[in-house]
Image 1: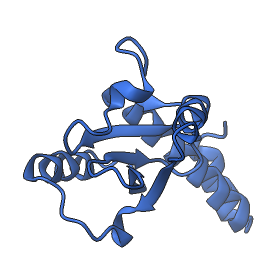
Image 2: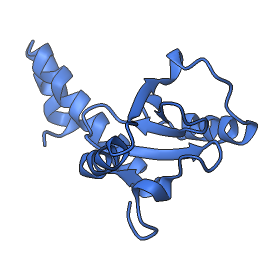
Image 3: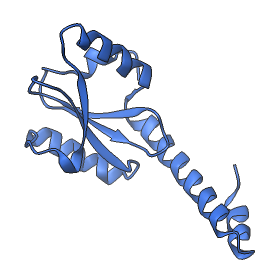
Image 4: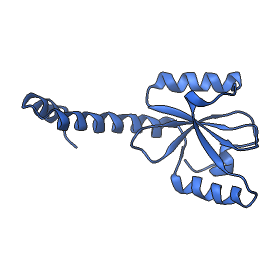
Amino acid sequence: MATPVVEELLAKVGMTAAAAKVKKMRTSRAKMAVAYERYRFIKPEKIHKFQVKLAENNKYLAFIPLEKYEKIPPEGVLKELEQAIGVGCFDRFEVAEIKRVPDPLLLGIVDGCPDRFFIGQWDDDVKISDILKDNEG
């Protein structure tokens, strides 16, 4: 991993694309460190395993970008989202919703990271414990 000094030198000698790439990587790693420290995370394999389980009942977990989600979350979830925004480690958020099941999960995303980070859940129709055991993530 290149240091801030290397990043600055790259920019100084005109290698702006390389400098931007180094800066983006450094920023992403810092965000991931905070996210892993503060939030439970869900590996892609866990989501796949949960999707397979849901498929047995003709259901699936859909991931909806927060800005496109039209339903109103409970006040507690809005407060958890506000706190997560304040931490500043997530690039975006999404709602993980099982179609035809009313209560979804709120997840944080760090660009470049394959894992999703659990922020909150509406109620208990879909729970983080449906995907992760208590000692996981």
